Image 1 (cartoon, rainbow, N blue to C red):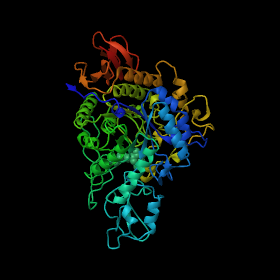
Image 2: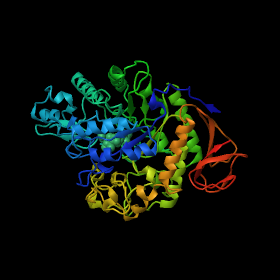
Image 3: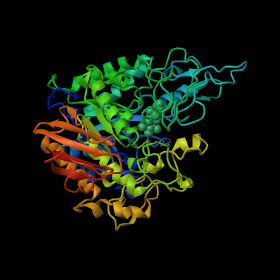
Length: 565
Ligand code: ISL
């Protein structure tokens, strides 16, 4: 069976791009306070150019009280002093462009910070005022309005409503410091469009849209008896075929009205696309929506360019699950003419080497406590490398989360007293939360803080064992994860992967995912062995690269190979 994509116009870089996610707090610290900053990022952009990625996406660096690590924005048009200045942002964008890297920034339109001028004005104003009308203020239920307006819970745990002095309640799908905006209000729409223009004028190449499925809520805000959680975002059903349950429905998610918003944003981006024919600026939906045919609606021709494929991220370590999610992804995205995307890790989930090292490989807890069963680090890394090589050969665009090119595991033994993630607190410590995937990156094995900052300070402690993962400990070392990524990205570029289709290769066994990936130069056969027993490789194949050492003619378990056949 062939799942084909039409050949793409090369100017639409986002169709095949490998995009590297920088989490500014934890990438590189120039100032020495132990928290990463924009000058630190600029100073390390050479690492990304040498790695061979096409673009960088920066998580938020805007003015923010940092109650949700910057996803609580107090001023969309300024840089938080923690991270630097607008001049630093301009310098970062300019340097990235010099190095041939596109820059995507994060837009957080579902909610502001409670420190945003609009929310402060709303608190100071009366019920029914225009100031309150920018958010979702409602009267409570019960005789004295003492009960929340509906039964919704926050994604981070606890109620989704907080009561203010004077008696009204406001909605927050996340932390109480993140009040949801009312997207039926034209003033909200105009303001965020202006924010898009502000950053486009500064030269960014696009935006990653936070909680893109959440902006519009069902009219009347009806009660709902599903659950939303950080753990698996699930609201329905038991796992089927090794897949996680579906996510992203309910009256707060994936309402039809969101698509009008993205159509109008597309028009804003088009104002900046000089040739008018090829879209060089991109919008990327962070939408935890299933099935993939629903997700594809966000990337129809007049909406966004890409949507993160969380169905791929949540697939268990199981060949049938991978075959199913790859087929479904290519079919659903091709139906709307959009590129498929592939992602294994980000700043919200347990890093994939650790997920794949769990007793049930690929489950997605919201963090791992020191007292939990610990992942098998070596096995998890072996599978992670195999998954990466599988991912980078698929048609479309792929995401790399900072540190995964070093094979970094989750920090699974963080002391509880250093945790900062609001989901740890709002679940009353039931869930460890996301701090373990946000630990500062190890650059230099011999330096304090592994070279993250000039003072050795790091806002979260790094495990001592991370010396072995430091970038300089892997640089030029045959077989290191860093060299594996570099080689794979170089081959991907040389062969022109990403723009065409695949054809499944059958007959290699139930634990194998095998396909011919069509490239500009011809084709490459990809064989991923997700089982533990070795499998025979096709006759006469020449090994281009593999995620672990492969002997002549056979592929060990938990290993992927790229072959010229
Ligand atoms: O909606 C969900 C479940 O159906 C969530 O998984 C949700 O999409 C996800 O938590 C959104 O994450 C993003 O927004 C959060 C922020 O904390 C995350 O870091 C960010 O990636 C609030 O802004």
